[in-house]
Length: 159
Image (cartoon, rainbow, N blue to C red; front, top):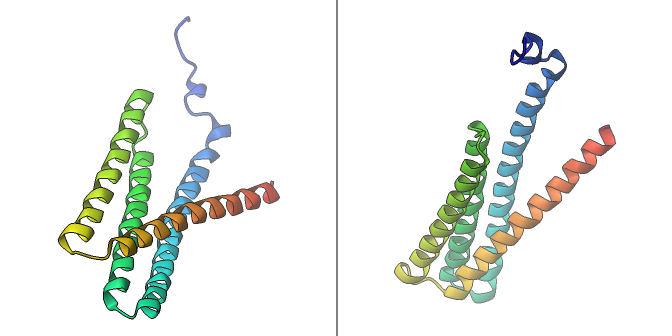
């Protein structure tokens, strides 16, 4: 009959292995997000120790850690939102695009609010706070690029 879909096309046996592979990719992405966050924290601690050794005041180290903490929170929020979006795939591309814009605006407002809190309310050193934030963002970008390149090389070697 016209319009009827054969029962075998609803769940093709050849593509059933994709489900396990998708779960594996999601788990690797979560592991990558944790590794990047830990790497950011380690770099922030090293940066705070270097700033403390150069200036000799704990306020500078706290300022660098605060800026780096905002960056770590930004990366963690990004990973959390990516995993939430993967759990609820939308069939409507327009809806997915709206969610992406909303998540980007949310992260931007959280970063602005926290940096404003560090600078205005806590009266931390602006240069150190922004330096810590920029350092954390640089680690986030380079680590994601390096780890994804490394992951791609492993996949191509196994194929």
